[in-house]
Length: 92
Image 1: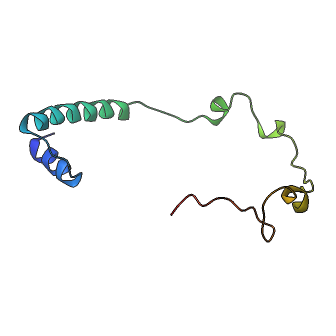
Image 2: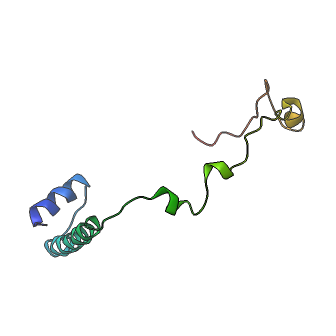
């Protein structure tokens, strides 16, 4: 990676580097890019059966609908208004 690209990226990030820091940053960025190029070369194939380790759709339990907990019971000890929880304001 050349110094012009580092200067451009620093300008975009509103960063200020000395000439020596820019040379060090160029060296580090070049190393990172070389590592990423090595990772790209790895051949990865997805195998759903191997990744799920013996979990099959047939082994899952049946989804059974159950009644919800009554709203009145949930809100009986809470400070509420119009069947809603009232929470403190955390964002101005």
